[in-house]
Amino acid sequence: MTYTVRPGLVDGWDLIKVNRIGQGWALTTYKNRAVADFVADILRHADRMDEGANEGE
Image (cartoon, rainbow, N blue to C red; front, side):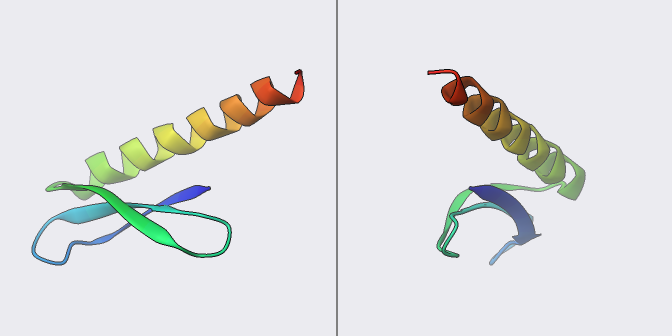
């Protein structure tokens, strides 16, 4: 799973969650690009941490 930021359909910046086969879901829209990029980065880190935690099971 990855997260990407793209220009919104109406305004602002859309945060999109994309799976391994390329399907995407819009999670939310931010007015500020820097905020959208920051949230996407946090979600990427959280996914990596979750994958690492699951390897120990």
